[in-house]
Image 1: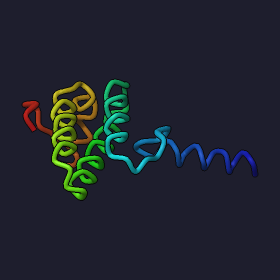
Image 2: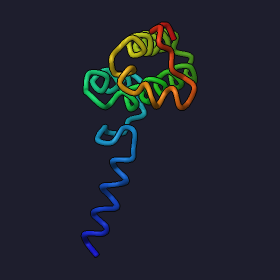
Image 3: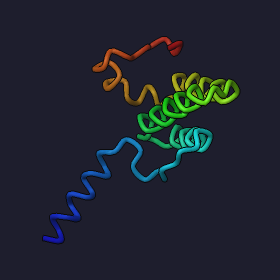
Image 4: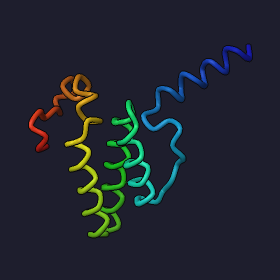
Length: 102
């Protein structure tokens, strides 16, 4: 029984895009985590997710400097190998841009 529960928890955590990243409401902290994940192989999807969440949070709070920071991150992300690593995922969701000018 314990093995089943541990297995389910492990599968759940592995299924999360940002598994292993502490939860935060602070959009600047989300961007910091996103930059760290962008440099980690296989964590590109989690990096993009956090970057988009930060952008949304900054827009809601009307923080123009934060919006600019989030756009800077996303621009760098779409030119980074982390984005290219998940080419098949983005093609499947009709969001892949091979020109690095998304």
